[in-house]
Length: 378
Image (cartoon, rainbow, N blue to C red; front, side, top):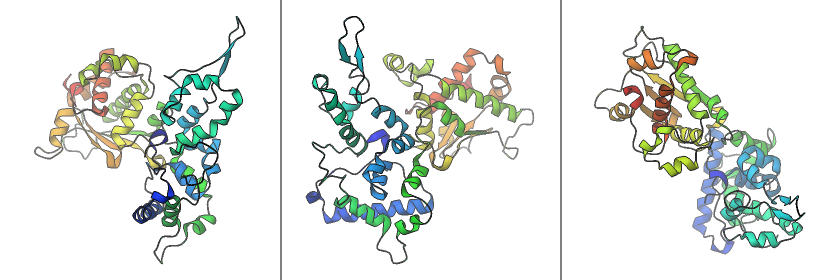
């Protein structure tokens, strides 16, 4: 089930309800995760907190440093609890900074569904502080506890699901497989291994995305390569326009063409993550940046795929083809656009060109079937 920030963790089942088939499944899942480590594959969307629970301990999985490293947004949200106490300077009364529309109340209601603001306000400060680990359990693992007793929950090291996953990960039923824990003991701490797989992949600011983007100019060997076009300059201009799009706030002005309501545009107008998140999701099929500092590649093209090919219709309609398996996008630029709209000096790009470009890119990455190549048609 989904837990914090798009990560997934096993459902917290009571041990007596775990069947032999469930145990076999989770042992196999552990083996698959083992192989992903060996082959350098992306472990997403398995929760790093669950893996830390398996390979290290609950205390390691919940350490503030680990949470901040693998999930900075979760760290920010969890840090809002306990709520701030604000003193009214006029009469000296103290009140809590609580609002259902933002954290920490939004955090509470997302993981502890029936949390009530009045009850939170009625608590003593010490009681609110005592809630901290329980909020963390609920947010990171979707485990709701009524007391400190973790027995028979997923947080118990003897839980059958945890044990089965750990067995498949460390000691699968294959004679030639070494005990993974013994292998790791000689080279890296398990918690450091997890950090190497997850750190720096959550989008905390648009610059992280921009650092990963690589725009490649039209290849000289490409069919239809035109010597009259300054392809390197065109790639630089495209890159700068794309960076401007990603750094922008909310939906671009022309987003109503995509069926986005005026109310949605207004409510997201100050969202500094919206464009970068759509961009990464569209090009990688994940809300997280590629593993091992992988690049997101934009290939500028001077021609469409051959007529009749599966991708030809897509490209002719949108001006692009996305390859999520390669974290890349092919962008088809007409000669008119290459020689005119992408040929301005840095300070001379007309606002209408910027607006047209951003509307076009947004239509390519926004989750809709309405993809139109308006920029190339301009």
